[in-house]
Length: 436
Image (cartoon, rainbow, N blue to C red; front, side):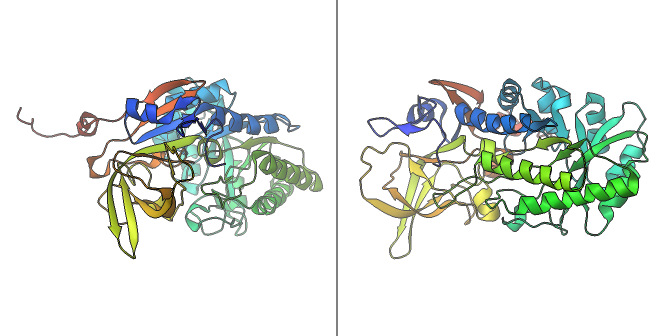
């Protein structure tokens, strides 16, 4: 099912999420509108959390904030006893402002600034993920107090079955220290000499939107072999490992992603067997789900405007959003399966259309050649599985304003982020006063 867990249609064919009428929400808050189903968010987090709590050495679930982040999301994480994975000083500040325990924060990233490293140290976060020799040099130059907790990001040399643009675990990647060329062991050797650092273990993340789990056992086996070599060569025994995230979701009916349970069983069984085979103790386990939590929970809602029919070629149906709120189709060819918000006659004739955005780019297409009931100006259309890597990558292209965000649960809709205004866009502008 592509829609959020609580979604369904009433007897009049009106789409409901969290027991709230989607058309009613669009009328109240305007479109484009992003609706997040709290039931879906919480159920996904609990599935990961329960599996980690069952791991013999314990661990943590650090939701990957780059998928979607806001104060309401962080507060939900606190309620669900989960932490947060941040990749910038801005994300760190949001987490702290929302009241998250800094010890439940991990901070990866391939080019952190000195200010970000300092902020992480001063906040006392759970761990920094060291990603480069440059970062090691910054840490070496820091005062010995406070001492940074850290993991070392290793690249296991595994390319998962996903789009090249979101594959990160192979040798040719900007992320991490390569195991296969020896740079990971040299970085570990250096890290262990730094009095400003307490290295707790290693981190890996092989990619995103992974639908075939076979790459994880291979990567985990490489990690275990590296840890065995680290103990033999350097006397280092990890007390924590992170296997990252990357679990994919369904965007169209043809997608068949593994469940959270299947993902966690693959990770934990492989990791336990691989470490025991190397006679290594079990470390605490960290997982970093993002898309698999936020993606299925999010629904984007648009209002239809213009239609353009090119006989024998294509019919375009334009909506009031597009690449400014969802860059994924343009960025790496992401597919979606739109549906009408109100479908009074589910058996009505359907037509093949291309759902186009309103922005000044020919490639501003949200969904190409999809079957939908006829849509005319003023109709509402929804895109399921829109909760991840949409708003977090949204822009003000064409001086557009980012959409409002609503969380829904039990018939109650909470506006958690208002729609931006032109004044918001103008606020950073500097120069001579504009005449009244």
